[in-house]
Length: 291
Image (cartoon, rainbow, N blue to C red; front, side, top):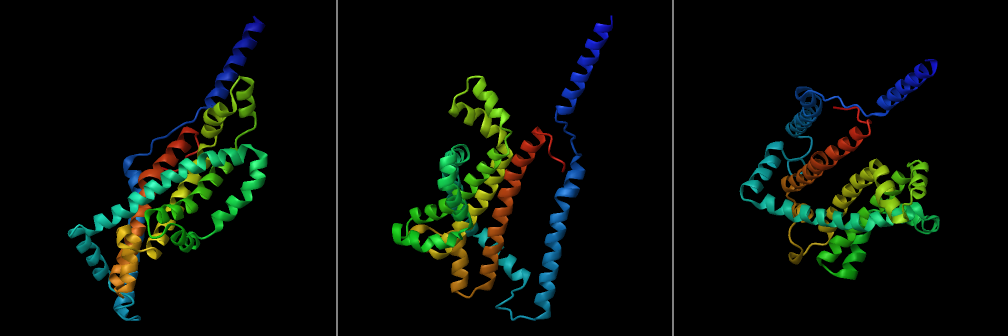
């Protein structure tokens, strides 16, 4: 009788520990998510425009240096009305997406190698870190000389900007995986490739996702640097070329319109793709604390 009671107590303790390990997800009401996620950015944008309008009205700087919000947003509206903005944005974002996907294909096995093979880490790890700190714009003159004014120049600069960030993010994620996990995999008969695909990558997903976010940011910045410097009719007309055209014509409303469009695309990709993916991963691990 005493043995049965002890066994029941042990089962209860085990169930309690399992319950503690199970991630709990509390759905936040829609109105609260809108209140905390949408309203603050809108208020910040409105305040920014109000300050901009006040500075313009005070005439501290001449009109050609600081145009009014009405002139800038009017330029953006005209570009959308005649369809030019859609063409410009698509030219840049299609390049950024293709370059980013190529960077993921290159950086993922590279990051796995650096993280799991000590000799490769010793040889390439410091170089990857150094490349991550190198401004992407530094690659543009060399890429123009190597590839000419072609799409290869654009994609080369994007790759050099994104690959180190994605690979280092994956390395950082794998470094945080408990060593017991791959040992268990090997003990159960998993090969090195199976351990990498089925154990290391899923366990390192939060760090890898952070590297992907940073890689996308570097892709976007690198693309803008390449489009601003390497301009040619054969390269099409993206946001960087639009910004460069405004500067060449001393058209400040166009310059600020290009900056705003570049910012909107960057924020849009973050909010539509990376933020939901990050929340999904964190919630699956019981780590999300926000709405």
